[in-house]
Image (tube, rainbow, N blue to C red; front, side, top):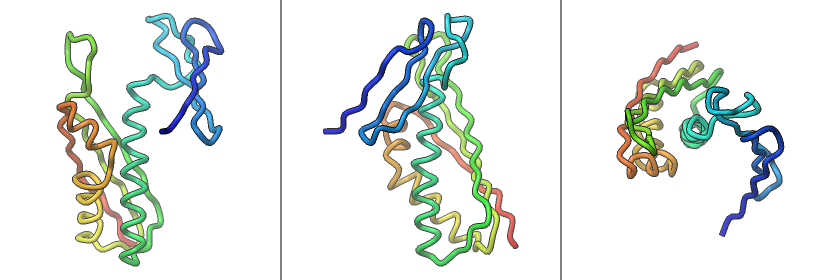
Length: 141
């Protein structure tokens, strides 16, 4: 079992979360909801987790395929359910921006494997009803 901790450290909703290895992340809510811009919004953190989970997969797969990555970026956009509480992620679109000596078919294959098979965060979102789409912007060196 994994154990994380959370502590209120600033204002009404400024939390500091600590993972099992002792690393911390700051969280807060919007100023209109009483937050103080102390940290990341929890639902946006979920999108960040999706990006990092998939990013680890894609980079690992491409390295195994002997592809040389010069730059790796992701833009993740999400749309939440309207007029619902809780408001889940309904649609998420990821733009993978890669450059280097990378074959396009290998990059597409790595992304498909990550999003459709390996990334636990993607599967968690999918099981909650979220549609995940993606595209690739590849710049070859």
